[in-house]
Amino acid sequence: MSRYEITYIVRPSFEDPQVDELAAHFSQVVQSQGGEGVELERLGRKRLAYDIKKVREGHYVCMRFTGSPDAAKEVVRQMRLHDDVLRALLIRL
Image (tube, rainbow, N blue to C red; front, side, top):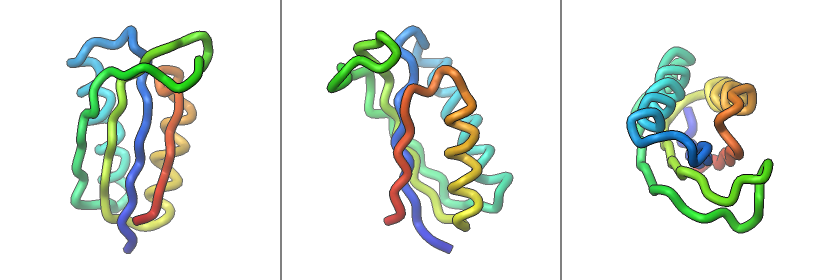
C-alpha cells in the first residue's frame, strides 16, 4: 500500500456545500476501492495560472490517502469523467 495525494480543481460556479459533496463522493470512491486514511483539505477558491475551458478561478481540494495503485487510478478516472472537475494531479508520496 502506498500513500497518495490528489489535488483537483472544481468549477468556481459551485458553492461550498457542493464542493464538500463532491469531495465526499471522491473519498467514497477511494474507500470503495480499498483505500483508507482519507484526509481532505479544502484550499479555497483561487485564481488559475491560465484559463481552463474559459474559466479563470476554481476551488482547490487536496485529498491524501493510503491505498493500492488501482484505487488511485480509479479515483483519477472518476475525476476525469466528471465535468465539474477541471484538472486533477496524482502524486505518490
